[in-house]
Structure formats: structure tokens, C-alpha cells
Image 1: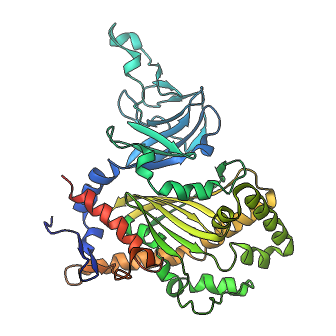
Image 2: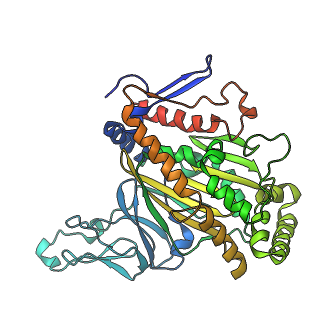
Length: 424
């Protein structure tokens, strides 16, 4: 494995380079598992997915099988889904509601809080057998912010509140869309693989520079739907937003939507009735939050990256996207739509229409992104001769002047990545 830094930054020369071997090396991925996924707060799920006592979801989190559940007393748990007896997966269902969990290998059963309920032939283990020490192992740390739950496998990690830093403000902008401050994951999950390194999806999720070149299909669809896609006079790039460093490797785009988020699209599809409904929603936002806050909630697009592998897209719909490496050149992606608990059937239909039109393997945009990422991954096979990615765009500008079409916010991710990877 190489000794030189994977990230070369020269502020005097306005140069920021990434060694392409970082995207293809199995040794790099092994280090990432140890130094990033084993030490950072990793998203496990949303409280709305386990509303009731006994509700559960089974997930892979940082390479580990996790049972994300609510016990009979209503407490949220994240348990390693691994039998304390011989290590078999205990709960093999994807989701559901259970009074307990049963291991099919030897019949050990566990309560919803993870404690051992029964072991067949328990007396064979002798009088010193202690049920209290044979329950399912909890994740070392489990904490939440605004119903988004995270686990950390480092017992000594900083609190989630401290870790999220400025990302909390942007999560608040999402949750403030609900009059009650309650959002919910909408039933239905998008799952797909991308034959590319996981870090490429971090970059792509906040890369507003690629829109015109990559997403011509979506742009033409919007035009055909009757949406005026002309940019305001003097705006040469697809947006005039900002790329924002939120601390601890978190970053976001913050993009004023000059088309009126998302009225232009919805009116073209649903007619003036949708406009009246959306106007009513905005009136409620102004009354509850004030003009300035309501403007931010309703009329800006945000793609929020929570380091290392969670993205919350907040545009024409809200998407929660989580992705995990399988190998250096393969990742698994899981996405959900997020909505307010108060929205009507018609509002929910519009939200899902916007979600499915753009995002996911059946959308107009995600297949383009997948093709672009896989093309990049294929190109990295020539890393010995063509060895560096250039993330220097906008680097000559002051931080506050850098647009979301610059790459300053991506550099925040890479600085944190490099810091953790090079730490002892």
C-alpha cells in the first residue's frame, strides 16, 4: 500500500487532487472499514419505521447485521442480529412486528429488548448459566436527532449531537416542513447496486456542475411537461446556490429554486388545484415559522451529506439515501421517500410522483448518475498512467463565494476522509 497521501492539496496553487487508486484499492477499503465505518455515526433508520412496540427492521449497518426495533416498552433498540449461542442470524425477516425473536438454528429465543427468553435444554449448561449475559448484543452507541437514528461502534465516540455539527440546521429545515415536527418514511423502498466506489456517490449527490451535461433526459422531460426551464438572465450555470461546509465532513448544497419549489412542475401535471393547495401549505409555513424561515423551508433545494454515507435530498421531494460498500468497486444503495405525517392523499401522491420521476432506478435522473459513476470507475483501471482526479474547481474563490457548482463542499468531505484515514 502507498505511503504518499491519497489527497494532495496545495492552497497556494489552488490545487486539490485525489489519487484514483483510492477508488479501486481493497486495502483502502479495509482501512475505511476500520477508521471510518467503525468510528463514525452511521445511519440505521427513522423512528417512523418502528412506530409500535414490537416493530422491527433488519439492516446491514457498517457491515454488521442490525436489528432496529422498538421493544415492548416502546424503547428504540439497535441490536446485533447475531445469536449469542452460535452466531447465526436471529431475525431473518426484512421487517414486521414480533413479540420476540427466534433463532432457527438451535431454538434460542429473545425478547424484543434483546434479553434471552429461553434456551432449549438450559439445565444442560449447569447452575452457573446466567441468562442476563446471553442476550443479543446492543450496538455500543445508539442516539437520535429529530427521529433520525444513528449507531456508533466506538464506545468512546463524541455524542451524535456534537458529531452532526452544522448538519442539524439542515435536518431542521426538513422537519420544519411538518406542522407537528413529525416526518415519516413512506412505505416502499428503492434498492439497487452501483458498480462503483461508494465515495463517488457522495460526490455525485452534491455535484450540481454535472446536471446539464448528464441529465438531458430529465431536462427534456420537464420541458415536455410544460415547465419553463430557462435560467434567469445572467445565470450561465444550472443554479446559483452555495456549497456549504457543515463541519466534521458534513456538507450541503443550498440552492434557491428560481422555478418555485416545486410548484412549476406540479402545476404542469396537476393543474391550478395543486397551486391552490401548495399556496395553502406555504401560508401555514409563514404563519408558523415567519416569512424568512418559511422562505428557506419552501424555496430552497438542499442535498445534505452526513459523513460518511447518508444523503438527504430535499428538493421537489425528500429522499433519504443510504449506501454501503460491498467491495472497492461495488456499493448497495437504499433510498426512501420522506413526507410529513399531516399531508393529504393528494399531497402524498404529488410527493411520490416527484420522488419517482427523478430518483431511483426507474427515474429520469438516477440511471444517468449510475452510468456516469460506473464510467468513472471503469476509467480508474488506468490509474497508473492517469492517476489523479481534480477537485480544484472554485478553489481560488473565498469560501463564502463558492457556488454549489464549484467543488469546495466536496473538498470538505475529502479533508475529513483524509484526516481519519491518515490518523494512527
